[in-house]
Image: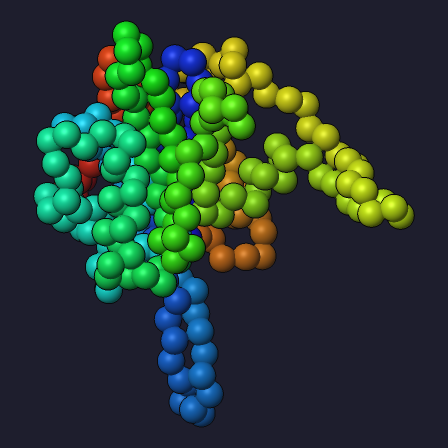
Length: 246
């Protein structure tokens, strides 16, 4: 599992992800009884990628080992084999989904795709989310009337953050929704880019720290990668790198 988040505010888009890869090992004990063990396989997996030519960010979540190979390797092949010079943030999400559905149609995996597109004299932000097995693709940063909105979308192990930010409702005796807990709102439209960076790190760090004390698989962890996209540039705020022994 994973936790990835895209925060979109007037100044730019922040894409962040954890680095943990969890696997389930199946086998039989000496008595012949089957068993399953969830374990951490790595804390150095890449889940956020920058398409430098297109200035587009991609974050992957869910099942990581597809055909026994990490998603990062498949993303590199996708960039080499499928992308054309005229591809932009409106064409990449569909191509990405279809690329993975060709070989792994039942993969419980998905992606956030974000970037800017020049329309007229201005740059318009686009934030998409797609899922391979569900064959779903949708834009996340628009209102029902099609205008741009600001906020955050997260995927993967998002229950902890959702429990903090999403109102809790129950059905009353008439079957109507009744809000029993309503968190204070976040004013996304007024959020600065630095605050968006801080929020994305907070979201992942809080998930990691909360899981530490819960009796559940610790399937979010490792370093947090943070990519920022603006109409002018795309740059890494923090990114794990290969290193030798110290």
